[in-house]
Each structure stands twice: as C-alpha cells, then as structure tokens.
Length: 293
Image 1 (tube, rainbow, N blue to C red):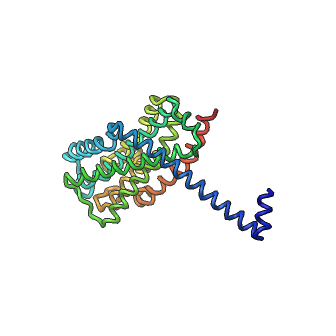
Image 2 (image 1 turned 30 degrees about the vertical axis):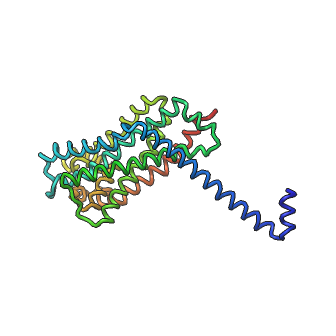
C-alpha cells in the first residue's frame, strides 16, 4: 500500500497509473493464456507427427468414403428435380466426414484423463482452460485438412461448384464451423465417460445416427414421413443443404417446407452457435469435476 501511496504522491496521477498497470497485467494474462493454448495445441500436433496414422480419419477415410458412396449410390440414384448425383453428394460427403471425424476428440480427452496426462498438466503453472481450447484448435486444423481432402477428391472425379469463390469458401467455412462445434460436444462426452472405450461407444451411438439419418446421402423426400421430419430437422441435414446452396449444387431439400430446409445457411449457423453456447461452458464444468483434487 505504501508503494501505491508513494507513487500517487510522486506524480499526482495515482489512479490513472494504477489503471494502466492493471491494463498491462490484463494484457500479460491474455498473452500468457494464448501462449498456454499454443503449447498445448503444439503438443497435439507433435503427437500426430510422431503417429501419422492418427490422421487416417481426416485423410484416407474421406477419400475412401467419397469415392465409395458417390460411385455406389450414384449409379442408381435419381434426384427429385434432376441433376447429377456427384454434384449433389459432395456436400454430403464433406458434412459426413467432418461429423464422424470429431469422434477422436472424445476418445483423446478420455485417454488423457485415464492415463494421468491431464493430472500432470494440472501441476504446471498454466491456465487450465487452455487444455480444452488447445485440443479444440488442433481438431479444428484436422477438420480443415479433412475438408481439403474431400474437396480435392471431388475435383479429381469431376465435381464442380457452380458459384463464386467466396460462396464456395463460405460453404466450407459453415461445414468446418459445425465440425468445431461438435468437437466441444464430443469433449463433453469424453469427459463424462469413465474410459476411452466407453467414450468411443457413447460417441458412435450418437454421431453415426446423426450423420446417416439426414440428407447427406439421399434426399429425404423418399423417407417415411416420421423419419423425414427427423432428418429435415437434423443439424447435419442443415449443414449439407447449406453447403449445396453455397456451392450452387443440386439441393432437392429446398423444395421441403421445413424451416431448416428453407433457410439452411441460417439453420446451420444457428445449430453451430447453439452447440457452442451450451457445450463450451459445460465442458469447462465437466473438466473441473473430473480433475478436482
């Protein structure tokens, strides 16, 4: 206290000086938090470099799924209103691969908890929230790689967007944002599970129905009415329809009167925002609960 009084007496500007010090301290904390996030993001990236097979779900799997589903379903699929199935399917493949690739978030976090890695990180002088954020950023980079692999595969087999560059980039951005939101949802599942095996089971039970009961592979017009209603309100359907709209590709769902199918871009962004708003704070609470001494 005497130091503050002496400083105030020396320049007559005590209060402003204290506010400036507080501002510098605040900016220092922000820089330290960013540094912690980068260190943990880099840790995850180093693990990938040492075990490149970890990237199989965002490199090899997207290529295989895109080729298999387009050529298997494409030989028999007739789209309502006409159009090429290849042009229709690419957005669905992008959405499906980005959805299922988030499974690794839950398994990875659950493994770190069960093997004591998180406990060791907690002993370090670092922001604890950076552990989850660092994981989410490394998974975001993996999602971008996954999207690039799907796009490259599609271009190689003849897919072409019929829209401007910024609209196409916007379609990829919508899909990657949704994938990022799902990483936080899966982070919650990973920390709620008691083991990596349980985490994998929980995520598969949710992610695969979410990806398949949708318009990813085929239009929902041919489904039973009750199943079509579920599919039309499925967030995955909104993202796939948003990508088709932004890519300028065939989108039979635009003829469906359900609100998400009439406004797919707004619906996709709304679902992503809702998942983030709910799951980011929930992930923080679950983390504190699992790591309490």
